[in-house]
Every structure is written in C-alpha cells, then in structure tokens.
Amino acid sequence: MTRPAPAPVAPHTPTVPYWLDEPYAARPALAGEVRADVCVIGGGIGGLAAAWHLCDRGAAPVVLEARTVASGASGRNGGFFIAGPAPMYHDARARFGARAARIYRATLDAQEAMLAVAAQIGAREHFRIDGMLRLAVDAAEAQDVRAHHAALRADGFAGELVAAADLPAAVAHPDRLGLRLPHDGGVHPARWIRALAEALERRGARIFEGTRVSGPPELAGAGVIVRTEQGAVHADRAIVAVDGALATLVPAAADVRCKRLNMLATAPAPAGHLPCPVYARYGYEYAQQLPDGTITLGGFSDLDGPASWTEREELSVPVQERMTDYLRDELGVAAPVTHRWVGLVGYAPDPLPRCGLVPGSDGRVLALGGYHGTGHVQAWIAAAIASDLLTTGASADADLYDPVAGA
Image (cartoon, rainbow, N blue to C red; front, side):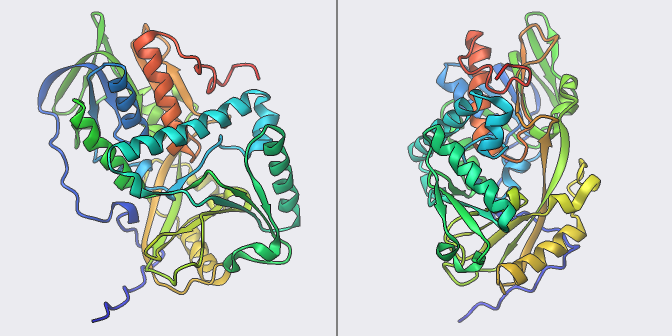
C-alpha cells in the first residue's frame, strides 16, 4: 500500500528539525555533585569533539548539555561536510595570507580524521563524500568562482570548474558556472553526533543531558566549579563549547553574536535531482538531496537582515516563503515541505572561530565557538587545539584561529 504524501507545512509553522525528527531517549540530567578531570559545556560537535580529543590524551571528561546531544546548531544545520574557512578560499587568502592555506589543510586533515573516527565507531554510513558544487548564479559570481578556483590551484588544493552545459539539470542555466570540490559532501549530523556520544561513553566519558549551566565556570582552589540547576561539576579545567551562545558563558567573547539560519526539508523527491550538495549565490543558498530523495534547503539570511540577530529559535516567515518559492521555481521540486526550522549559530566581526584560553581564568577555562555557519569541520580542529592547550599547555595550531595573529 502506498503511503499518502504528507501535507505541506505552512511557512509560519515551525517543526522539529528534520535531522532530529526520530525517536531518541535522552540521558539523565546531572543530580548532585560530581568530580571530573575536565568539564565540557555543550553537547554539539564542538563539545563532543573536545571530549573525544581529551579521551585521546588520557583525560576523563564530563559533558553537560542543556537539552539533548546535537539539539543546537549541530543538529539544526544543512547537513554539509565541507573543508575550508568561512570565506571562500580566495577571500581567505586576501584576509589571512599564508595562514589561509594552513587553515584549509587543517580542515582537509580534520575531514579525514572525522571519517576515520566515524568508521571506528560504526557511524561512517552517516557521511556521503560525493563532492560539493559551488554554483555561480550569474556572470558576476562566475568571475568570483574562477578566482576561487585559481586560488585553490595556486596552493595545490583540489577543485574543478564545471561548465554550464555540465551542471545538474536542476541548477543549469547558460550564464552559470560551477566549482566542484571533491573532498566535501553531506552528513546526517544528528545521527553521527549521537553515535559519537555513545562511543564517548564507552571510552569512559560521562554525558548529562537536560542540564543547563547556571553561569560561567568559577575558579575555585586549583580548579573550577561548573554549577547547574541540579548540582555542580568540580573539575581541574573546563571547556566552554556552545558556538552562538558563547558570550553568555564567556563574557570575553562578547563579539560573538547569535544569528538564526532558516532551513526546510521536503518529502522524498525523484532521485537524482541534486546529485551532490550545492552551495549557491556566495553561500546564501545551500541544498542537498538525501539518499531517500528528501531535499534539505537553507538560505536567504541576507533577506532576514537585522532580524537575523536573535537568540530565539523563531522562523522568519519572509525567508521561509522565499525558500519555498526557490524550491519550486528555481530547483523545480514539487514535493511538499515537511519540516521548517531555525538553527542559531555564532558570528564575529572577523570570519574566524574563537578558540583559546579565557582571559582571567589562570589557564583553567578554554572556549570555542563562533563558527560562522561552518562549524562541523572547524569545530573538530578548534576542539583539538583546546584539548592540547588544556592538557599540555601548547598547540602547534594555536594561532590558526587567533583573530590578532599575523598573516
């Protein structure tokens, strides 16, 4: 018997994010007081990556998550798995000079490391490495794509121009040009991150969900205390890994502002509509088709304007309406929209993540976040840097995300 198609979801109606819309049994909340080597605040990719790196270095972390693992930006994004800093590579070279190549190489290495960990813990199936297409939607952007490609080639990185005639039919147009990045792809973020959480517990980490931290880590004796509504963690050190909400627990990160990004997902569309993830109009639109035919689409944050700066997971109706039009009129997808949601991510005046020691913490508290919407891979790097700094006092990559470091 054929299952009836789901009814369309109105543009003003938020739903559970597509990635999180499946059964899940939450872990118990922290009750009372516990002791740990390191307390990690945040159960997204940044926090769990930090816990993974800490386990590699012999530490026994406790992870505190206010809601459930992957419930924040890590489970509310476009499901892209992409290398590089937030700016397109030629723009990154102009901003950061030679450091841009180090950042790009670090993200490529991080992709390989993440895939190796995923294979190790039985989660490799949640990734699809079929390349990503950066799409220029007009002649002006085509020039930018050529500059992007030339910068990659100059520094020995992979990338292939795709002529208009060879673009996927859903995005083809005579004035368009593509740049295929073979190392990128897609991921089911919630399944991968939740598998990572389970593997961490097998390695001895403790994870408490439904546990909201009351304020910044407090210095106490030679260690720190992280207080929650239900109890406290007494630890030698703490890592704050909460991306867009970083400034709420790390006042020194006040330049990281919280921004909403709108997303939607459809019922399954005919297979092959989008053969790989597509990043269009300087990254303002991004879409992919999942193995079951589902289309996920995000974008038009420029249409949201000043209203996008918010800490509330509240839809922008104009953006959702524009995405619906884009889905039908520009991608040619007729499948009904089944999910609409918002992810909150961290942005700073410069396009670099924040990662390092918190001023005034006597080296006991580190913070990472502010990934400018590109946190899945960069968070893995930031977490490794933080874990090195915490356990050894040094990291060869400590300057990668330093906003005041020289190029």
